[in-house]
Image (tube, rainbow, N blue to C red; front, side):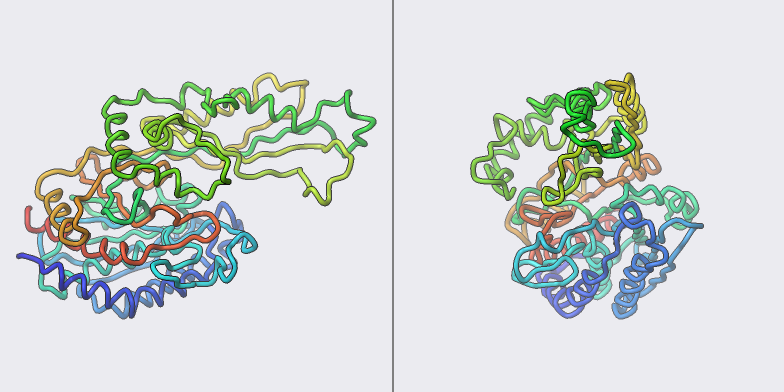
Length: 472
């Protein structure tokens, strides 16, 4: 059956405007912090509220053969599983998540707030808009469009979790418990990614993994006058600097833990040059840096490789350090730093975590109390590119909808689900895509969703899953 993509695009516009954007705006108003950031998430009920809101939206969509059920195993964060019976051969699993990162409202621009949906075309602002509230809406609508067009589609199962921003540590028991319901997919579709621009449809072939934890240094049991202690007691901050030098070269930013590196294939560097030729300086220009800042890499292609295939360290939080306004002349008892390593595909995250702990805790400088407490780790993901009829369907849809071919890229972020599913379904095709792009600022202030590309991707996804039924 030949799909009328123009007609599907018209319907996508209508559904997004009349249905998706209003419900997504309500979703933005729910704080819904991931369990790692809100230990009392169960009592607050906000993760459950996001699932209830999405289910209310599903009830109004008129999707035939659909059923859903919220699951809760013990004290784990909840998961929603939605099943849409197929009208053609094949099986597809859709994935997205509803939990969010924390944010500071004072950092958002005037007139914006993380828990207030604001539309300023082409954007919808608000925490969780692009990461990853829109994902479930887009996937369900892609199936609805096919049903309205009378086109056969495979059996579709949506799994929507509420622990992704914490590293998906609650997800594996659900995948095991509901393995039979998830079936044996021909394709796994993940809507939590994007690309370097909003003109193309982007497919993510690789994702970095993650190792994170808290490095704690304690030197005393109470604060001491810095005049009395300076020169006798080593500061916890200086010891932190010594320890960080063990895992990162501060002059280059190179992570010095060998187990966090992989050999980078030559084809990766060649693809980086191709991406450079397409996107130019836009990758660097998307970042809201100060005017005088220079990029860490010498060339754009080196930056693309470093962002996706090399390990990096970010210090994303600190305890034991008062604000500048409240700081007294006191040698502090302790300094705690939250370390976040991004690791390339192919690195064993659990082993990398163990090595980081060993390196940081061994022979503490000056005999200080030093501990590294891991809180999450996830492997990276690398899948071969799509080919055959599925690739042709995506290409044809992209050319008609955007006038440009779809492009493959890598993403420096982490989606733990991808590595989990690749291990569980090694023969399945993987389509990791989305409408994240320059300036969307996921996890940061002024997070926003690009509405036009989201509407287009809905139709492109419809064409892709229809091709599965047509070619099996």
